[in-house]
Amino acid sequence: MTRIFLFLISYGLIVVTVSHMIFYFNYRSLGYGWHQIIYFIIHTADFALFVVSTITLILSVYVRAPSRLPSSRE
Image (cartoon, rainbow, N blue to C red; front, top):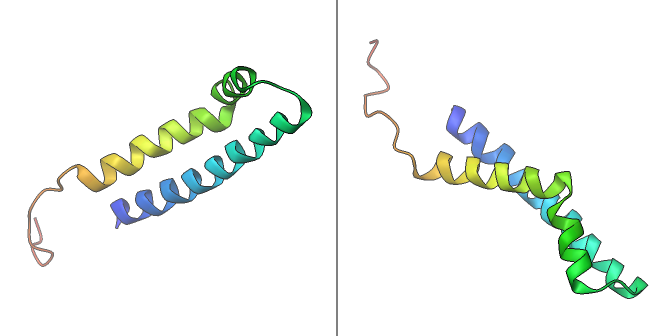
């Protein structure tokens, strides 16, 4: 159950942070260059949250869980 919860939370955070990063590309219409925009995106908290939630999503999908029966009481 924890893995499903981590998956859903990290997936939601990825969607939100990527949409924020896409909004930052609107600075291009204000006259900023691509280098300035990418530099700005990399130094925001959204990018750090994106990286952490991507790592969490990958780990929740690809890390094997211990194999035991759901009915075992150990």
